Length: 154
Image 1 (cartoon, rainbow, N blue to C red):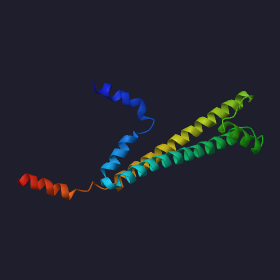
Image 2 (cartoon, rainbow, N blue to C red):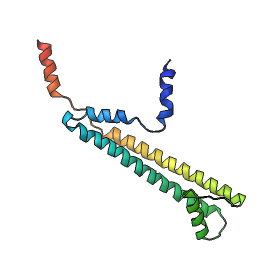
Image 3 (cartoon, helix red, strand yellow):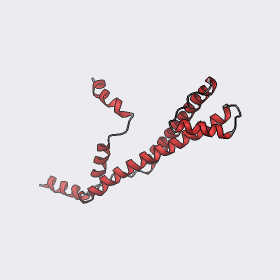
Image 4 (cartoon, helix red, strand yellow):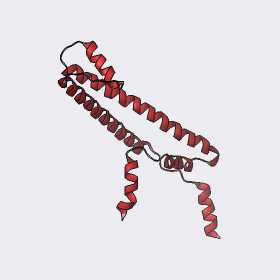
């Protein structure tokens, strides 16, 4: 029965976390008068993180892609490798290539994707470790405790 409750969340789990949950956690951690600031901070952090993540992973992929091309393609000159790298990473057609060159381009791109995924996993692990080490325990609300004590005494 648990599988039926979990399955609807599986396709969504690889995309990105539910932003509503992040905002709810932030709003629960600040006084009501600072709710707008907390919500805006969560949203801004999520957007900047997404943009920076795409930029960094794209740079890692492109650097690895170009280095593999330089290693594996016959020495036709650095300009040819740079032009091919630009054509492929810009989404342009790489058609008309010899079969061997096409295979090398595909392998180089996959190797770039693998390195980008490994870097992403390393950043995720480092972030998780930082959260575990640096996250403070929730502060106790002394006013709520005092009110609870008064109610228990009555």
